[in-house]
Image (cartoon, rainbow, N blue to C red; front, side, top):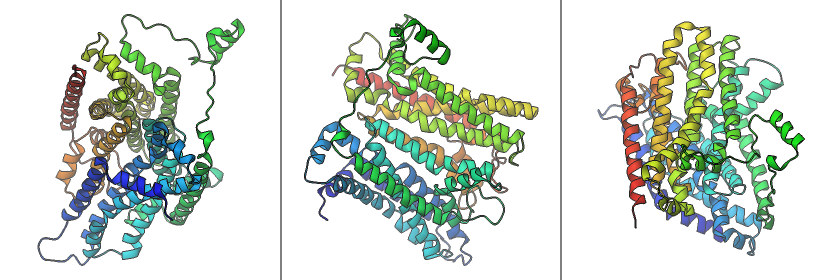
Length: 556
């Protein structure tokens, strides 16, 4: 079928500098993973242990690339067309809605296939080292990741038709991908081995994630699997991928018509304009009423901070309270599971999962807040207005950063009640909890400073958001992947050095987190090196961010 949308999207993606850099970086990374363990002494490992070690790291790195690189391109496919005015021309062209959608889908999948093809030489080298099954392991990895790519591309296109800006589309897409691939595994940890409807639903929810399937293929067993007699989720995963792709694809095609542009907006209701009885009732019903008129900016407040809070969705206090409430409930739920002996994990394991939960929230939410601090203003033209105000670059920088710092601080403080309960259960952990909170605070500053600097280098918010996510995910997820591959092929010294890149490893080491008998953090001495590294990197990124703001504030 000669579909012009396919060629335009596919070739358009390949012509961008970002796509070329992505292809080159992925090719170099996959090749380096194999070269690290390639035999150099002329002897062959007949047991296949070395190839299994390389294949393990290679598979996890390839999954990370699929999860955090591929969704960024289709996430902006329709929203950019809509904002530029070309989507209306497409809908009014002789092409049907199905043809337009298939063109976008196949164009995105074509570029995704090129990303996967960059790993084929590394996969062939792993197979050539011996000890691997061609179809049962190497081939199945690509089949699973192909299904994963299809599903996440369909999700990204679905989100793209329901958002109004590119940065919102990228942010929502990454949130859904993270929930489907990682958070979906969580409920099965709590309910496995039990009977009933909730246990069955948790199993199917886990089956929607590619992690259990991938772990079984590399020999780690399925994620969350304890004991024997567990049912594999491989076939269930393929069923969910196909079914969800068909349903979301149909919903996206149904939305591709003229009604996509006819979105009636509510006139809104201001609480101050209601009757006295209605105002009194809303005072009792709402802790923070989002429909009340905002007061004026006080003289002591930074107007940039107030502007950020009032124009950003997560900056509004009622949304912040909802987010904080969810974080607090999750932390207390994990601690309650340890106290009630629902799962036989121990307080240290629960603390480790709380640390991972906090880091995941920070890495997921912070890039969406920091990447647009400068790029959104430059893209919308608001930066020129801000330059003409009497505010200095330092006041602008401090106002922008404070709006993010308050939000991230509230998210971290929301999980403190869980640590308080942990200390009540095991009082001897109070010093560990204190050091863990220092690590988490440094991790928040580390993330904010790097995200703000990276985002200030771009003029487009979508590119800034995507790059921020990519950089922070590499910095936080990369050391954990190296830790999982200790002695296969990385030595203890290499893993310890990698874990000092950010404070996450130090926090898990302090809490003595143990994923299994052979995978733990007890043997690593990461303090105070990790604190010094995080402080120096954060200070350097903040200085670069300030310099970048000063540079673009200069008269042209």
